[in-house]
Figure 1 (cartoon, rainbow, N blue to C red):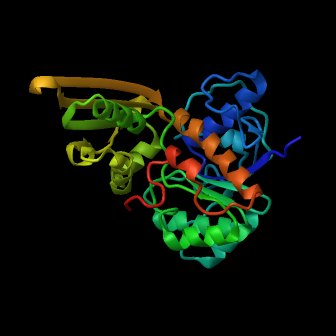
Figure 2 (spheres, rainbow, N blue to C red):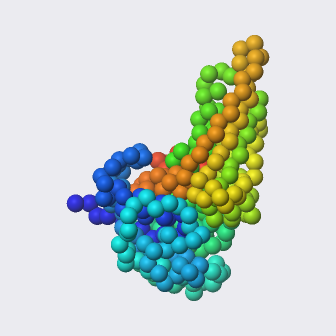
Figure 3 (cartoon, helix red, strand yellow):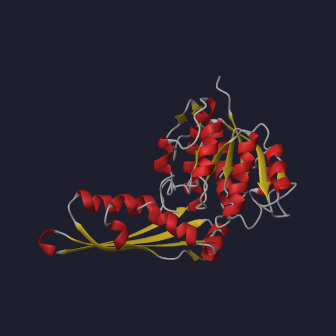
Amino acid sequence: MIERVRVAVVGVGNNVSALVQGIALYRASGSVAGIRRPVLEGLGVGDVDFVAAFATSPEKVGRDLSEVIFLPPNNYPRIIGELPLSGVTVCRGITDAADGAEVDRVAAELAGAEVVLYAAPSGRPETALAYAEAALRAGAAFVNTTSDPVARDPQVLDRFAAAGLPLLGDDLTSQFGTSIVHHALLRLLEERGLTLTSSYQVNLGGTEDFRNLVEHGEGKMRSKLNALTSLGEAPDLVEVAPLGYLPHLKSHKVAHINIEAQAWGETTVSLDVKLKVHDPSGAAGVNIDLIRMAAGASRQHRGGHLDEAASLLKSPPGTAV
């Protein structure tokens, strides 16, 4: 029987709540709804064990992971009944990225983890790099779900490659989010011979991540544009509006996409799409694959960037910072 993946999570917000609850749900039900790859690298969706967790909020540190995922400001809904205690106590995370002693402490607490899932808020690049350094010292693969440049740092990527450890990032493409839908519609226009004249997307959400990105959104905007760069002329014609934080939406994200184009005879085509999803579910649906990819590659001593992960990321190595 294949060995389960031992995962450490950094940040215990909505995305981790969706992942932890979802794994428990799939183990209990045997359902495959919403799963693209029931088995990946020989690992099923339920073949993931959480062995460490880190947060900086005093309300979360020192409590069991199964309790913390339901604490405010987390607002992802409960999708399964009562969870038993996980046995994982949330540890104090890095508060000073320049403090080498903190990095050493976290590296020691990562002992035994195969994969570190970095799901802390975006907009803290020094902290993201500090956790990547801790993972490297602990001999663990690193998955960066934020828009902060980690895998796009050539020196960091080279060090992970030399150590035979995967480094996946940056910024995941949600399972069915605005970027993937917008990208697909723009590609469809190109394939059908229509001429794009303009397009935009607007994203509204009610999670703490959205609130944080409203204040520190520069990297996220760049990452969203990176997701469209394969479309030739499209990036010059596509606008991404600043993110909007509406607390009453809770874990929902509401996105509006507009596309204006010209068809045969220069006649006009106009398309408006509204998408409403639970944003953390979209992250979990991709994180489960990135974790298993990272674990499989690590067990094969394949380090650095994995080509097979690129389609799950907005800003893989080689895209703009």
